[in-house]
Length: 187
Image (cartoon, rainbow, N blue to C red; front, side):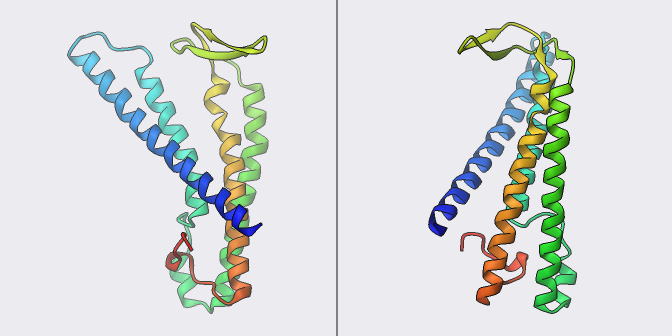
């Protein structure tokens, strides 16, 4: 059971890392393409800047889940080092629980925002699921597609926080707990 959870955690972490790398590559490609088209060929794409911004936003939200899982988020490591290990453990667990609550907020209000979001990006094409198949829509991608990352990221943040709390608690009970900055995530 534990080995299956570790495997799932590893796969999710590698998948998120791959998504982040892909989004970063897309940001660079869209920016370079837009700049070359704008200044060399005097014919900039209407979608270039928007796709760069959307790639950036999605990258940041996926990276949030990774930083929570890897315990690289803003923490009070200096204070943790001054406190006894037991006190530092409970403060770190509290901080991770607060981040879990942030993930819940992102899920709840993110779903609300996606379901009520109006408007469309006139410069974007998109694909949609209609009559049991994927169809190409030539224009006007709904804006709710762009902000769908909020509840998705909220779910990923919650899962990452739960995984971190569980892992730290098991290590604490086994007597092998160390401060987050001293930990090797691959253990």
